[in-house]
Length: 633
Image (tube, rainbow, N blue to C red; front, side):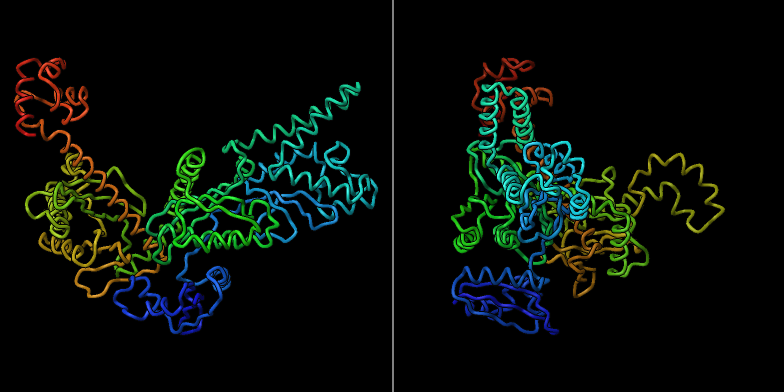
């Protein structure tokens, strides 16, 4: 039967909340074979001291209870969401006798209608200033409202017609509430009704020769049209929907939501989450839907409520109960789907680009903060037992495809920031480069052998510890500084992409060269464990550790750089290898042939006459090319 379970630590704190169609089957999976579980699940079970559960009647009830407990207990092994910034909303306080239009942040209040969120508070004020001409709703605070009533004079907005002045009883409470409701209807997307009504009134006033009133109504129509122009039409069918997109890496994910009402984008909001458990995109979508729409209270908030359609990048693992839960909360049917084509697909791609930019901006802000970088270097120093902070870190990664085109990358971070001008690429030589461990050993040997050679060339080894000789070498060092390059500057820490084997291979390569003042560690992708050479167990850094975050950034950058080099090398080999050995066919002629025919395959199918027509080829070389390609196919 369905239910929800909680794992607690030895102090009774809830560390994980989960739901299941069958509690018995799900809980048995945790205790059947510990070694078969995912490592993060193993870590959770090792931390847990007890488990309890609650049986419910349906999967939807289990979904509701799970999200309720996640919100209440904030378990450390569940996915964590946090806003990437504080978003302002346009709020209308319908719970007051005289509703007020205002900018509001933070937790939502019952009885208040919300529109947005907006990127900036000034955008709200600009919209409100435009609409108050047509819907003169109160915007003043309680103190100003009360004081105006006591003195019997409205504020400036009341005098210029941008407030109906309920403070001095120019309108009744019912009349003012009707204005507020019209304001909310317009913001909810029911715009054409008001424009049609004002246009009809304008024509009627003109026919009755009330030209001043007609001009005022004309200006009101233009004000509403200006307000609409600021909200671009993205869906021509006037659809109400929320468009959700994710951008993620191994540690974090950015979520972006566009609120579309009446076919127009009414608001945008973003979150950045930390992955504290192993999860998939589909699972992230399920968790997000529950936490996002579970916070909308009694659905009083217009844009924080649930629209008819929710567009997601992937459907949840079990979309049925989620869709039913959303429909029950909305009080009507909800379509949950992945857009495949058309305007909705294009809009989803736009939201995805925003999510990618938000994740990149979050990472850049985190990396550029001096305090954060100092904390990261300090944490690495403490965790690895280094004598000094690793101000220069070099990371190495190997890339290959089934042992072919083996390449390696070296990236450099100084003071926690990337130094791209000092990146290096290596093409692994010989038979020893067919596996990652031997390739790591080769590239470390080549890099530090070059370092020793360049250091010796500058005379640094000869004069080490001899002040008199050092003075004699100063001018020589200045002359060869251009030759020394960057390899003559050693790192404080070498990081290799891999576990214990790769770390020990790098350490062995350094030991063979007699280098004992450079620390080495490996960072394994699967568990994000830090391995030290010769140690039986890895160093475990907290998932929220800035030190681990810096090591991961370094490792991921090395991986990216290696993959880019490998793809370029593989692509070059695939397109040019068949032409390389043809006599008389140099780089310029190969480029001309590939430009003309597009590929070696198309070139092979061409006739001698077509090949000879290419500038610089001629009949004799065309015959040689045809013969060579015919023999290679």
